[in-house]
Length: 303
Image (tube, rainbow, N blue to C red; front, side, top):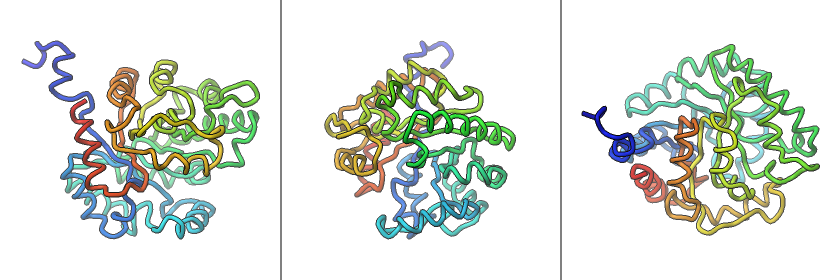
């Protein structure tokens, strides 16, 4: 019967996105307190996928040291597997009908510890390893971006060797002209489309002055993952989006998907048609996750 229905009717009945995921940085304090209970909490809302964040036990020492230096500000220290083994994490997720197709990690670990990432992915079922941000000192000039593009290609080769795909997640930097070019476009054009994929954060992309739909149209099939949240009112960075204080200025404008002005429904529809495979709600350190995260998934189920 389903095969006889027009696609748009079928899509409306089933929902454009059949598995809605969540980036676990949305509720790290709950995970640190009770990992298994929090995963059950997410499953009951309807989340089917999770994206982990590092550092992990095997992460480069520099990444672990950096994490320790910022956790007093964050108010929590848990990350990675939250004191559990990959097998224990897998068991908890499986018991709740959840999979983990993706994990965020740092540049040093991607460059130096890909074999360890591959071993963990083999247990957990990851398909993607994602760099959440380029270190500050590696994105100051256009030449820096050219060098990081070369590094991305090498990481992509190594990821493929261990059965993974490498992705880069954008924040707000690299979206304004630098020495006459848009750095994100340069990365797109100087990386191998078979080795380097992308995860768009629709909030930071919009804050940087580029419409998510235009990027999805400009680079079809490069974006395989999407981070979803909404913006209470349209805001851009006070500068070029290159510094953390500019990001923090915009945190108060984050809201649940569908409660803001970004046009999440239209972005998701375009993303689905241009090759995006995984959709993760991400509301960084959100207050009242039982309300905010449920509002996001309830909205996305209707898209």
